[in-house]
Length: 128
Image (cartoon, rainbow, N blue to C red; front, side):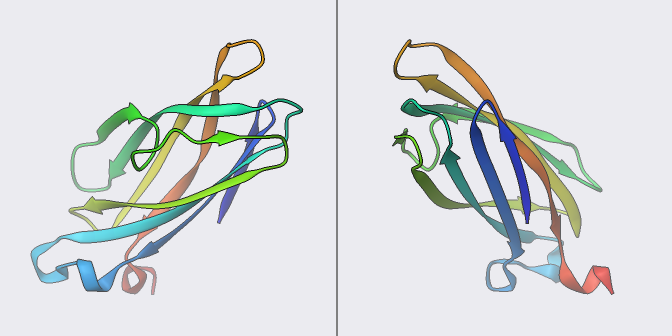
């Protein structure tokens, strides 16, 4: 599990390998990651966009961006948490992801970036 706080927003990420969605013999590895976003500010925020950098140890890196997360642009009041699960595929046994969210301060309308901690995507037998 990885945690990072930026501009009063705490991001915690945990990743796990999905054997049921992977084809190891064909070098297709699938991972899920659970993200918890907590607003520790004294004002409401809205998650507007995401930017991800996906590093695959044996293949080209990818950059993914878009509006919100899993089709949502949640609003978090002070002290509230938002959780979601998403996934990523790799062609190799080891990779990592990192990135940032763009949030909006709903009091003054300013946009700001909140960094997602770097987290590893690892095929468990590779670690032995």
